[in-house]
Length: 461
Ligand code: 5AD
Ligand code: SF4
Image 1 (cartoon, rainbow, N blue to C red):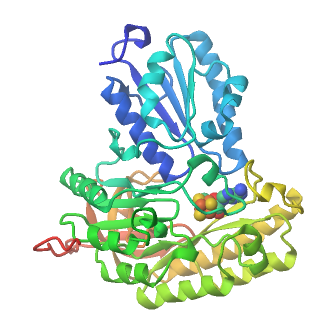
Image 2 (cartoon, protein in one colour; image 1 turned 120 degrees about the vertical axis):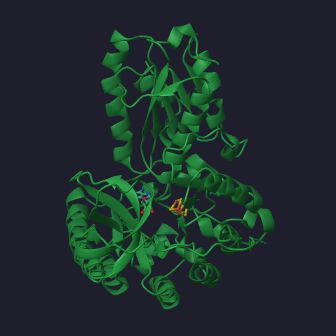
Image 3 (cartoon, helix red, strand yellow; image 1 turned 90 degrees about the vertical axis):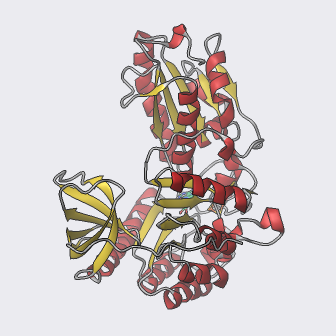
């Protein structure tokens, strides 16, 4: 047990983690928690009297930077009154800012980057002598080997690859997450089997570009094979993944999605722009026509599939005509949801150096037009579900009305439904009775939940 008297406040030493950003960061936080619990720390539900406060940071857009420094500023006064408090900053922003964090927030005790999660316990111990900072340029050990404290008993994030070999000109991820490294299929399958043994029924496979999974192992992508391998695991109910890159999303993955019962009928396919010239400047390696072909391909193979996307508004040089191409694509593709972002210039990216950065007012005005259009489409897509009976997995009480429950359909839609005594992580059948822009309403139906057949023998290759 590595917790020393020095960092004990009262009784057991505790940690509190605040995670910013994407699902990869959520999962990295589970690893940080796992390592700390192995060292004897217990999880605290608030930062107020935790012995260690960790910020697992994101740098994808500028507001993520600002939020971190705002939070650190707030903790400074806590540290002044409680000098034994250890403050740790990890993740993408730490990787990007390196010594800048030390300069802007000298009271931070530990800074570690994206490539050396495993060093957290050592750095924390060393920080009792002096602040300890360590940023590496490459991942040495695939982080799946680290102890993990899963935050959900029934859902698990599973890393299939880390890093990204693309060079989308707006994106800072390759600079802070490094080259793509895939994990072996057998290791992934063993992890999922272990998780199912522990009660997990749903996994989300994580990679920056899941469709290039395996290219560094085998010379050719293996993602479709991976889906088929995991589909043979008894006791697993749902497989999700995020995210494919449209340029690498091909018929073999669509066929695997259509044929694998456990793979959910949802795909997140990031568009970014509907204009060919803008896509070229973004270095996305597909055209609007190719993107629309992929949308048609998925809808033809998987009836009622839900398609979600990411769109950036106000990329450098974006003209009104280019933006209108995005609007017309959105009107044509009819996404179930779109995550819309205003372009944010990031250091170490090619787009930051491009001419034609747009004034905030223009970007804001376009952004509002896009959101209004997508909201109409999202509401219409949800309206189509009214009257259907859907299988949901119960996520817990609804935040708005704790007497109701939140559930998630296989198509990843949130359903708020009336029910008592349905445990988190259980599957139920719910009749959809109403639809809003971002959620469905429903009622529990009396018939028992649907069951997937139990396979006689694993079908894995
Ligand atoms: N500005 C705005 N949005 C961005 N994204 C990535 N980089 C930027 C940026 N510089 C968005 C993309 C990506 C999502 C995760 O974040 O749409 O798909
Ligand atoms: Fe960024 Fe493009 Fe890689 Fe996605 S595929 S992480 S947008 S560089």
